[in-house]
Length: 376
Image (tube, rainbow, N blue to C red; front, side, top):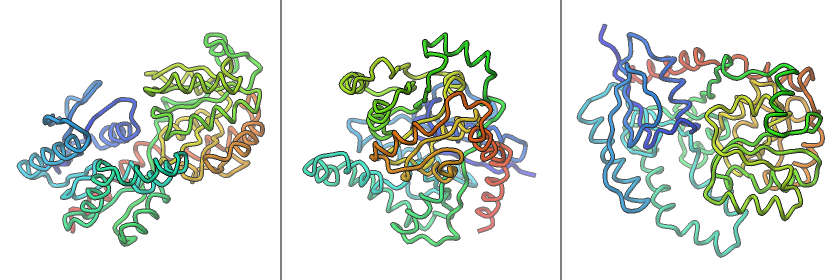
């Protein structure tokens, strides 16, 4: 039987990116004799499976709009030339068979970002040529006759897509991200103590981990401000070109000694294992992988109601959900998380919630979706 030729489109493949981790887990789970796996990308960092066919396209760009448009045009030419059975795009490109809305709905993100900007800057945000281009490309993609299925990684994004683009329920599948629980797990007491010593975190202190690059969107300012109202520590994993601004912010709130910046880490497991919880008051995030990673390590999660990952949280049971800018609620949640939660009920409930979301389950869901697409 001839293998199905599947093409996955992602403009830039970064090992630490959330969409890239979804792609990696999906491709690994789907890697079998019945599939011919292809990736169309501008650049690929990190190792590659030798069985995957990587199509590199890197057209010249001079600004953000040309970067998006020229890659879209080049990717379209490749999939039209290659005549793949299914094209699954993680970018807003009209003409794909399947679109994974891993970045959510652009207008919804702008609405959330506008909440932290002065009114005049908010107006400029929506008037921006780049943002207008992205919203227009998104609309064209959703109304493209070639589009057969949309994958959303949360019910939140599914609801937004249906409301903003009038797509029918049957055209959208919610497929949550997968987590490899052999790679993310809690540590024993001795290992936890050793990690605290290694990273100079007091053994008895309450400690939260924040994981994510792009500090504005991921809510680091609110996280630091909330931490300053408690005696907890915050370990920051990720990068941002304005990192110094956030260090100064911690200093202005008088908690700079309790807020530690460790940059991007290839292995985040040790930081989950020495923490008591994940703190991620993101302004807008469809469903960050870090929530699943933290829960697999037994961590309660504090996040926002504009994060798709909140769908996995029952406030007071395995974490807390509040408005991204409600500093008092965030601080109260931090205080409510038990220190040294290795044997606590909250840790047990976190692990139990994600136990079924494996790469194998993801593979089954995608295989079923692809079968439906091919039959249309």
